[in-house]
Image (tube, rainbow, N blue to C red; front, side, top):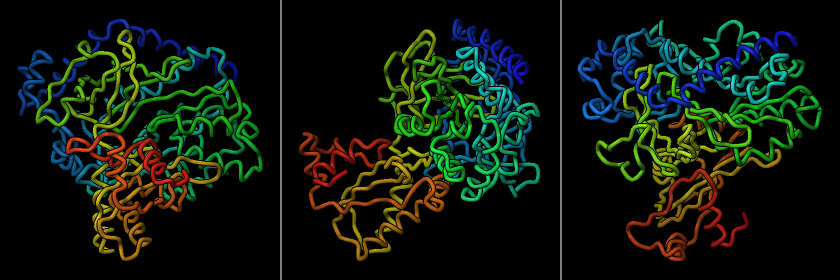
Length: 506
């Protein structure tokens, strides 16, 4: 295995030269991809509608094609789900990555083309390994197996040729044979729908393996780790997998989980590698082991634009090209991809921490949200759930805010709400149950995390005294129409501050 490990490490490190190329010539690489994408799609229905054949520059493209989001592309995607082709992208689209919903839908279905699989998602996975092997030339990663926490997979019944699942499931189903050999557990377990059974089966199947790497969202990784320790009676993961050397993570902010991982994997040599990938594409990789910034990956079939946050909300906001961005400013990311997403605003906000090369950090979302565990609860989800709870219990809400409760010891995480009522609910506990149940019905990711309280517990709700939020805003010198209570936050700053004012122990 040592020889195989050396060969794989050498192969992976070879890609570093390509990475260095786009680091050195970022604008040339982006320009090349822009023309490649426009030329590829000129005979699609979308390309003909916007006359891609006559577009010669990014500026013409920006003038002609409006900013898009899932709701504006949804009519085209629904036709693709029904089997129509050559609509947004020329090659046949047979796979769709299911991700958390929008204002109008429980889930989104992002088209995944053959090109976006190979040139973006898989390339990102290989580059991630390449960067790791380059930073840790003495690694032994390929002497064992990679534990991958996949999602669930199911066939789209609308069309026999179309499949969908969450992104990890789509990737697992399309992995090359050599990658499958290095992955554990086998596909029958990795793609199970029932997460309670799945965690048991994953733990049992991987305990005897020589696991050298783990990839997955921190939430489920902790759930699995606790299950493994429960079954084995060991006190940490290194007693189960002594050769474990790297944890690859993404999707949610890792900071709140760092201490728990140090307890689960008590080794100063453990390598943590963050990636920035989503259903829409693979965008960034942490390329330095002493920094949490991520290198913006520029040769994955994605053309980038950036909208300054102060322009968000305008009907067709002006977007900047890569060469026009500045350090430490918040931008919303806009992408055009080899999966047929055109000037698509993914909803994330980033800041550039370096312009040579281009490195970024994720700063949030274009709208308030809670995504501490991959549940992606947006304002619209919260409003719908509160409305239903009010209807069922005769309540009227004056103000509210919510934030995450992070994992602590054996307890799962959760959401903590502070709600001030104009009219009290007839049954407070029923109010909480209806709110929780409605969130589960309208948000598939929240529902998955709430399953059997495995990653998210029932919400903790504080019934705030009259004028709580008024007094809080007043204390902050923020009374007035332009100042609003932040409805949802992905950290506890507001919740803790208000609870402190209410003199509730936190």
